[in-house]
Amino acid sequence: MKHRMLSGIKPTGQLHLGSYIGALRQFVQSQEEYEMVAFIANLHCITVPQEPAELQKNLRDCVALYLACGLDPKKSIIFLQTDVMEHAQLGYIMCCHTYLGELNRMTQFKDKQAKGEANLSGGLYTYPTLMAADILLYEPDYVPVGEDQKQHVELCRDVAIRMNNRYGEIFHVPEPMIPEVGARIMSLTDPTHKMSKSDGLNRGCIYLLDDLKDARKKIMSAKTDSLGIVKYDPENQPGIANLIQIMSSLQDDRPFEDIEKEFEGKGYGDFKRAVADVVCGKLEEIQKRYYEIIDSDLIETTLKDGADRARAIASVTLDRVQRAIGMEIID
Ligand code: ATP
Ligand code: LTN
Image (cartoon, rainbow, N blue to C red):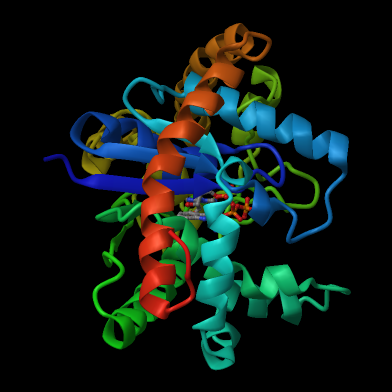
């Protein structure tokens, strides 16, 4: 039997090269070998304020991009989180089994709080418990995510193990799967921070739907250093190391030494032009398919079929959990 893999993306904005390399690319590669469950975490989107029209566009774009990047609805289960009510219900149960001390250790929330952002929501604070439910409902063996999500998958494991000890084996405990290369793609303007949609001016972040000319410009003006050598040395040359990672991931995990060799004795201009060619080639391929899909009914049919298949799995898990906890009376 195939092992199962599950992951989700929270499209609070447009998907970018970081989410593609750190996550989406793994989903696509995995669907041959694993039974892939890939969902769109729209409940997670509203943990921060959203404009309804913009949110809807981002969700539709996200489904179209899943498909454009190569997820195949015949092989993978693709659905919208709110189409499967079991997420919210198990999320509440997980929340009731998670300690405040555990939530207080989550660095993503602490970072947001430290930035002094006003009116952070309760949903943002408890979101790792909903994420635990997202995962456990489908009993996956692996959860492919970028480095920033590892702590949340570990929390999910801790709470699942604790509940298994208390109620019997109600959950299958999964492992996070972090890619060796590309787990943390950095901003092009500040290679000490991760590439993110919350990057102020957006010059450090390449969106999958960026105009190709803009994407090229962002790479050509990426921050580098004054050493003038194309070498993978994240400590002393974080900008160049980031570009090497981007190039390697988009060229089927091409070895870093191979890239270093090709650019031996050449300037950063030549190297950046080559990286821009590779990135724009990939974006062009994705965008071509995106425009074929975005106005077609493939989005609706994919989500309908995906939700039916997802519900069939999730309802069995939720029922087992509620029964074990002693919450159910009728069948
Ligand atoms: P952002 O910081 O842009 O808001 P996010 O991590 O909050 O991104 P998602 O878009 O849901 O939100 O991320 C989807 C997946 O992509 C997650 O598994 C995340 O770990 C991964 N990911 C996001 N940014 C990067 C990055 N810069 N490098 C590698 N992986 C990333
Ligand atoms: N929290 C993740 C998105 C996410 C997820 C999940 C990833 C929600 N539920 C379950 C893997 C498994 C994020 O912010 N990127």
